[in-house]
Amino acid sequence: MKLSREEIIKSMTEWEEAWNNHDIDGVMSLFHKNIFFQHWHGAKVHGYDALHQAWAPWFKNNGGFRFTTEDLFVDEVEQKVLYRWYFDWPSMEKGYEGKPERRRGVDVICFKDGKIIEKLTYSKTTLEIDGKRVKLCPKKLL
Image: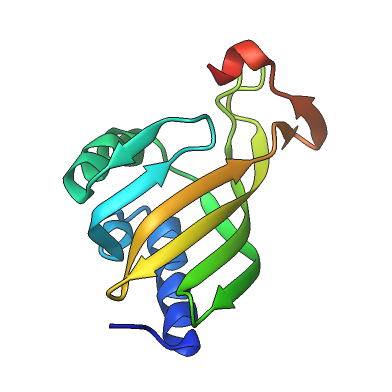
């Protein structure tokens, strides 16, 4: 089942709303059972259950976050999306704990049978924390 461009945009909008409501079940509802996810720091997860298990503690222990779409490129024929976003939340970086942080990134998303089968996440390593630019050190990325 291929989604139309409008259906993809609607799915991505609802998905972002689920993220912003901190609703792991809503977020997971768009994933294919054979999802492959690669985090911006390189961690890889295969399969719906494994991804749910990996993300559940993060959803439980982190609140106050919000994704905002900066741009969305949809290839209806190939069922692919380039989702450019920024992410606001209370920082967890050492020395900046609790201060407002903004991260910018891109997800490359592929759909299969109307669900996300692949999600590759890329994020800038210079953040905005409390209005200041902060570079992540390589040792923090490991």
